[in-house]
Image 1 (cartoon, rainbow, N blue to C red):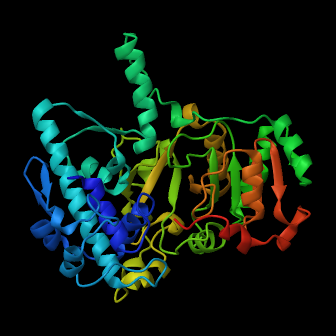
Image 2 (cartoon, rainbow, N blue to C red):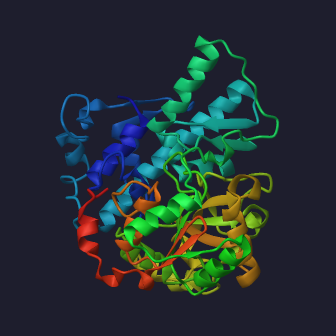
Length: 438
């Protein structure tokens, strides 16, 4: 029960979000607040040692013996009952999020420093649900003692599938462990199914969909980058599906990071989720340092490191416009040359993209860069709020038609929304209602 992840989940529950789902929201909400409750947390809820070990006072929690995450004593300590789900967010929730995030980062950093003291290693590998806290990972990278950090992209419970396979192969069957000197053998985490164009065409024909087939990749990329530059929202299905909670360019919704309106458009009209939730940038690996404050040798292929946006990319009037604003009102300020992926604290959850791992997705961004001068796209998972990431062409078409998405790309097939037989008459509200809110 003495778990950093469960501490974070307790605050997820208390701030009105769903446990084992809404932790991302708490992390995204934290920059809107100040960590005014951090001392209250460390004085009462969790006692942290210098080596990162800790003990939690179970009187404040109910998950061991009861049916909720927090106890009446927790509620008394923080001045009231948990926020009701879907009710308006207040500055209090933002400050609570900032506070538990600050405590989580401190524990992670102390653990990392202690591990370095014990081993002297320059390399750190992380797994477990807390390793999905990409803000904390970025803090370890910037403030910790390690040169290299690698985070398992399916670090939550799903990653146990990899662990049990390794356990059987190496320990039960006594097979040798061979480490590739070339680097990351996870291969972009593209470990799921892929669909051939012929199969996709048969599926689309059965659905009555209207589509165009581009046998030449160059023509396809030219068409899609032109649409992205016009601020169209594109559903993108290519290659094998990603393993893990992040879309990495195989089952993604894409947009122009230079657009000032794109974050709110994609949140409210495509994802149907809260306007404060940030989107991640996919950036060509060779241009990452130009846009984000990452060490030159560090990559972030799995979107699991948050880094500051380079000062050279900041809007010179952004800070002045932020003065006097607080909470969600901070969202409505252009902060950089890539405003759609720049969070209110001038950070971004970066995915670096390389051709060796990402293939056509890399070439799409490269063509977009050639066309616009910008090597960055918005990349968010291909689903709506509460829905699993789409896998099959039928999944993708259903989501495409159930949202205000403009374009769908299924391998070599391109669908334009206004050309579809159902058009805008699709029942968007019914589609949203078919999934339980996250």
